[in-house]
Every structure is written in structure tokens, then in C-alpha cells.
Length: 281
Ligand code: NI
Image (cartoon, rainbow, N blue to C red):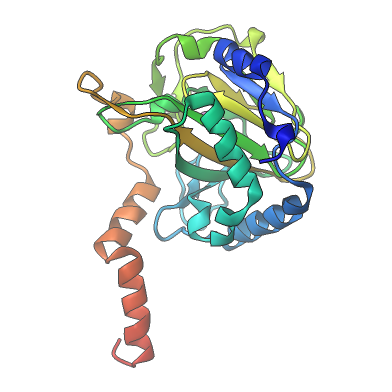
């Protein structure tokens, strides 16, 4: 990790106070074009569709219809070279400074906001997506745009200090449990949101409880973002029972994943390819 990415005492204090941080430089310059090319390919090829890893975050995800807001979970499963990036090591080092030495990589995902009509990402707390009852931990996400992120193409916006409150009430957008996204339905003062443009190579960091969203993409270019989530020390929490808005979800991607896993997942697919090659299937 380069010295320039060592967070200052002021940055760490600001994250604790506000629940988010803008970091002007996270990714080494030479890695940015490679990352951009990787994500352009992954989204073009819609990798992971059949296993429910690629889906429409903002729609009902019907086959044959273009996704309004395509999302890919665990892109490193489809492009393992991502794991070797210094960008990822830098992100992990930064997360450890904010969440402590027991911090581990939790998951990663990528979002493509299409040009011209890419919808706003609803206001939500990432923690509202948690579906692992009985546990407690702090979590943060590092949001790395693969072009300048601007108010015009849908940069992030945050409600300062909301990470110090509780998890607010959420629901599926339009109360449609087929849509994967969540939106916060509790009242809050959106006019106090802090809009955070980020130059290419920079990132925003936000606590999983910080209320946030992202604007529409009304520019002429697609807006790519790679998001790395980390969690701090885990402890048991018998009182956390999960959230009703997650239990009612019925998305097409969940169904594709279920079918894929029943067929043996990655192992089943490799096996079927071998059988086909042997002429047995
Ligand atoms: Ni989020």
C-alpha cells in the first residue's frame, strides 16, 4: 500500500462522525484501463446469468428484456485476475484502518448504470440487506467508479451520521418482492444529503448503516462501479432475527441460482461439459 493511501487521523475521524469518506486516490493509474475492460466484457457477456449472479437490480429481471440496472455479484469468480489488483489490496488495507485488524473481505459486486436512462439507485442502508440472523459485525463498502463519477452520471450521495442510528424500515421498490433492490421508507431529510462526485481512480467509502443512494445516469456514457465490501470482527447476536423485507423476496435471480445449485453448481456444469465431450450427453 502506498503511503498516499494511509488514511489520516482526520479521515478516520470523519468516517466515524459522518459514516462516509471520499478518497481521491485508491486505484493505481495503470490498473484502471484493465479494470474497465474487464467490467465491459463481464457486462457485455452477461456472465453468471444462469446462476443468478447477474441480474437486474431495479427491475423484475425478465429474460429477453434489457436490464434497467445490471448488477453482477462476485465478479472475481468470472475474472480471477481482479484478485491480483493492487487496487483490491489498497481497499483491504483501508478497510482494516477503519474496521480494525480482524477485518476480512466480505463480498464484491459491480453495477452498470446505462447511459441516458439508468435509473436512480433507491435510498437504502446496505445493512438492511443482511440476511444472516444470529450474528453482528460492522461492515463497509468501498465504491470505485471506473470513470469519473459525477452528479450527471449517478455518483453516490449520503445522509451524514445515519450510521449512528438504527436500521430503518425498508421495502422492495413499488412493494414488488421480485425486485432485488431495497428502498428506505422511513422519513429522512433528503435535502441534507451530501452528493459525492469522485474522480477516476478515487472511491467513496461508506458504513453499511449509512443511508445512501445514487442518482440517475443522464449522461451519454455508461457508468461502471466496482464495489468491495469488508466486515470487521464477528460476534454472536441472538437478538438479530433478520428483516421481514428480505424474507419476502422472490426474485428471478434467486430462482435461477436455486436451479443452478440443484444441478450441481460449478461442479455440475464441469461434469456436464466432460460428458458432452465424451459424447455421453
Ligand atoms: Ni448500497
